[in-house]
Amino acid sequence: MVNYMLMITADLENLTDLQPQEGCDDPNFTYYFKMRCGNCGELTQKETCVSLNETVALPKGTTNLVQKCKFCGREGTITMITGRGRPLTQAISESGKYSPLMLFDCRGYEPVEFSFGSSWKVESLEGTTFDGIDLSGDEFAEYDEKGECPVMISNLRYMFHVVK
Image (cartoon, rainbow, N blue to C red; front, side, top):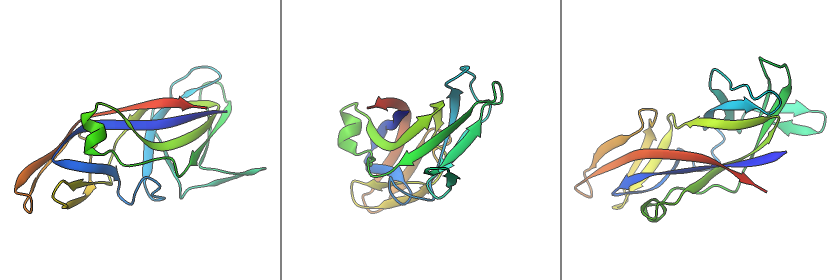
């Protein structure tokens, strides 16, 4: 069992608190990433989707994903662990650090190549909320009428950090 924390960062212009639409533990938010088999090292060809509202019963408990490697046939699971993520603030972004988003308990697989996708929200420094943001194009640009300034998310980056 290895736990991987998905860490994100981006350049936030006049913005703060980048996170999934309903917060870091949003049950409806779907995480998309490719996975590497822990047995044979094969990388999945397509992105796998994992969300809190989808569970699979196991002999002892539940998990969010059960998947078999197409190459070697070995089965692996991914279980999402809530309560450890927090929004990416402007202060964290400016410091060049990453913010933890979601913790994954991975058995038989290693997550790689995260895709940001859609259903994000962010707040301007003036308090305007931007909902339903699609970050699949790697950036977001808008104008904050209330703050009378441009806002932008760019240079999206992620990493999976092993947590003990």
